[in-house]
Image (cartoon, rainbow, N blue to C red; front, top):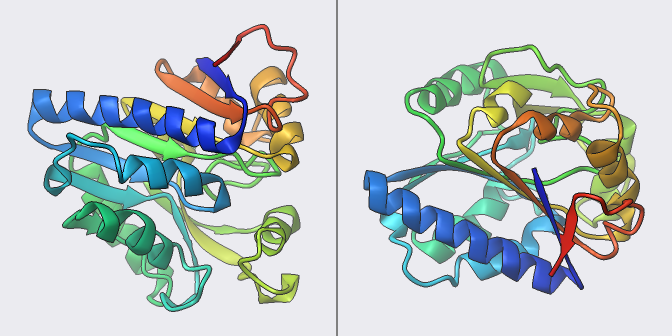
Length: 250
């Protein structure tokens, strides 16, 4: 695992996007197509803005899956991750192959359908974040590290739901759905390469726990340390509690 620390979230997003673009170009050159997993949330704003502007990527040959979606939330809601990805990645880049998790549909049907599409071929590159409670996708603590299915329906804990209010996606806690569809931890780890983008002071406790504490379901993103090809991009705010032994400042 590599940890890269940038002075602010814009520089962090640019550096992570440059890395992601380079990896995508390499996969496309070698295989002719690429399958990626895209993350959402406020932490990904700068990264996706820079990535969709990166030159030399034939997005028509990129197939996209996403990490998670709320159960029972319309695509027109400002917090919909389908809406987020369509506006911030898919439409901007001109992606034509994508698989959205339909929060309005029966969640078990969605899990089976999109999960089957995801399992059809290996994933080349996954983008992820780290939640304020250490979650990976919507796998809140204690996360299930054993389930082998690509997607599962999960109950969101209060810390996760409060984060969505704090980021401005919902006006109050009661408005945040209690359930979501999430990619499983084991499925995320199947990606050939993982790039994690996690800025802001509010993530610093979780970043320290996941990167320097015990690898545990209570710190779900800590499992990333078992993957052979992970790069974590932080800004100085999210990295402020780290001891710094494995980190490189850029």
